[in-house]
Length: 265
Image (cartoon, rainbow, N blue to C red; front, top):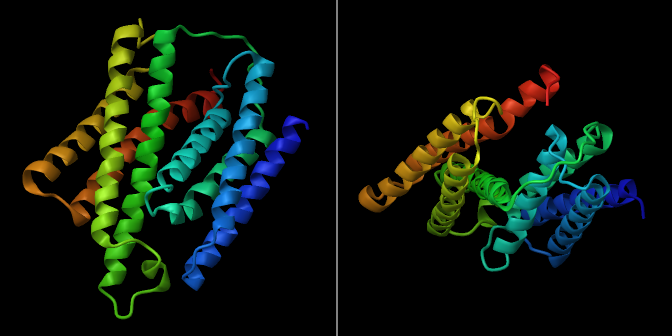
């Protein structure tokens, strides 16, 4: 099969999985077919990325391509976590995003064909950054669901989507587990960046570093507040979304401006 065919298969599986998950929420049921389609979508997605990377002898770091790669990792982490945590319903937000990024990658393929290899030190920085962003992305979506859940629980009767979600305490516990793991990888990313990147100014990385540090400070303060003062509820939700917004700007803000607006690489 061609990369285009594999990409289209992945998109179709993402869409079908989203439809089934939405149906599960409406009908207050859970079907294994929705998750199986999610696994198939991720398999085809990674297969597409692997073929393109082999053709180019490197991972494609174009704006849409890296967005597609990160979204596939987010989807994979969601599926892995859902094996023992009841968060599979987050797929209704993550799977459409992954399919959209893959569609944009197919429509606007990267024109950058240069072969670029990285040392193991830089690979540590790159992949720890991607994993940190992916985990904290899921945490941000978890925070949004948690906010909706809190609002709906104040209403009588709550909407059906709330009845399909785990208890509020379980949702909060999972949120902080995701943030804790994400902060570990973000710490590795920042430390490896400071140690192994020679010139932050020449590589247009100053604003990314500052925003990432701000995100790390926000998430670390939130974890400290949780341990020391028992922060939860709307406080946790707001801090999580602020931290992720900063991280989102750090990871994609610069690439959007440099590659799509200023036409630089």
